[in-house]
Length: 273
Image 1 (cartoon, rainbow, N blue to C red):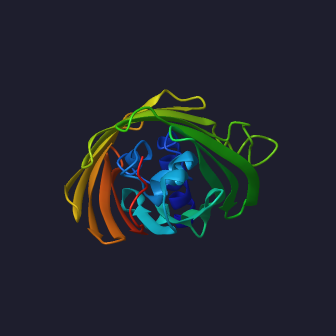
Image 2: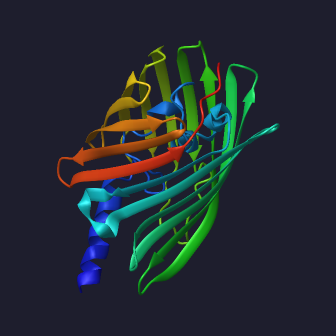
């Protein structure tokens, strides 16, 4: 009985955050670096695979969050990006849930520049669901994105997740949404980024996210973010020492509570525009 109740709570939490698809890590403040040149990191790049092209060297990271302070709704992610002469390859692994109910994603990505102002990227995903007493299901889908570097300070992008509307089973009972995202970022300086994006998810109202990041000193930066539907607000700090970066953040839902998160990345300096 206790496991059944926790499973129901997990499902309700997933539906509440459907606009922030459960296979994508991070709160509203975590993906702002996607629309930039100087604020990229491995997880923001995997939010839009075109941004992988901005990573100059082998980059890796680990991410963990405990949604609404519940162990059963914990999310873990690993990311890796490897630049080559023909483009940057990425690998990501994500796991959400607990023994009786969990979801997994394995993604293999590729991104590259098309000249100095445009970059493109794509990722092939394997999505899996395991539910006690109901068994397992899995499917393969893809996502793709494009970034436009309009000026050295202004950047914009579009992204589509599961555009072919693939489902976990033929009956459609395990719904995987189609998600379209469009956003833009403005780097007012090398130390300040302001970005916004709009997300359209199947059968849901539009979600809007606003995010900013400010580098107080090279070793310390702060992040703020908020989103609508679901209504989330959050913030975080980043501590840096050479190529090592540690992110501590949290976002807040007015009904479900606080979600703390931690990320550790190893990332050398970014490419110049």
